Image (tube, rainbow, N blue to C red; front, top):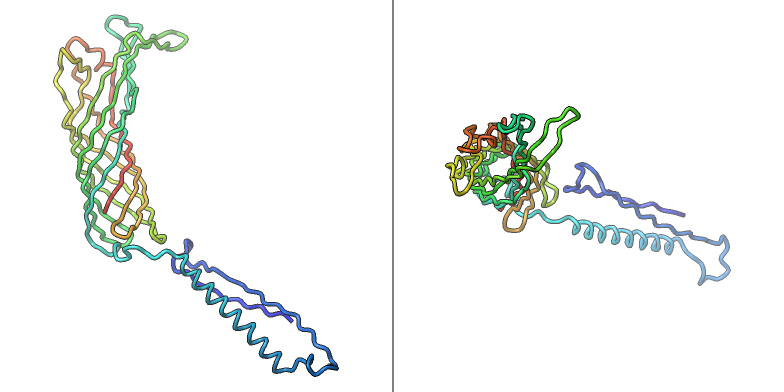
Length: 299
């Protein structure tokens, strides 16, 4: 004779809402009873049979209860469960950046040789740093408005090399091979919209996007004879930003990792050729800034 005992445990924090974890316990026992009992000591009465069945049910129930307890312990308790209910909170952010340029070459012929032109490119991406203050306003359950004023520092190296125009195609040369180091020190004023997913225990994914106004304190440098400055940058620019991240709810604060891309909307090139070096500024038709950022938020 076989018995099938099962129960269903509904998980509140299951990765897929509404999904159930089902435990099935099969308790089987074959009871062979003889129709005739020659020995009274070997005879199984109806009371003995019921008592054994009751013991099996009790053991199965204890197993189920113990499994429920152990199953519940696997669910991590939520740290700072009240944190998402706060209307306004503050924090700070530290990060690293890689600054780049999207350069459109003008392909203007060189004054000394009409068959050649200079081609600019960003040769090296140097890591920089970001420091910001976090102000977070929660107007809705899954929506946050964020204002993160701060500063960022970085640099880009622009390399110029010559290209020879031919009938078969352009040939690259490295006659000039000059480099211009462009340093930037930004004041940043980003206004961002953060859309959050459902919280999974102590982790919550999100996407983020918005606009960022940057003012370059190191932009528009004066030309210097001792240190050649071939190109100059405008001081202000407006960027659109988009990214994604994860919130980690720790016992005493919330820690977030965020990867974000920031693209400038303006041509930041100052089209004013340097005295004695007009070919460098003339080689660039337009130049837009691009920044990759990985940020660590503490809130």
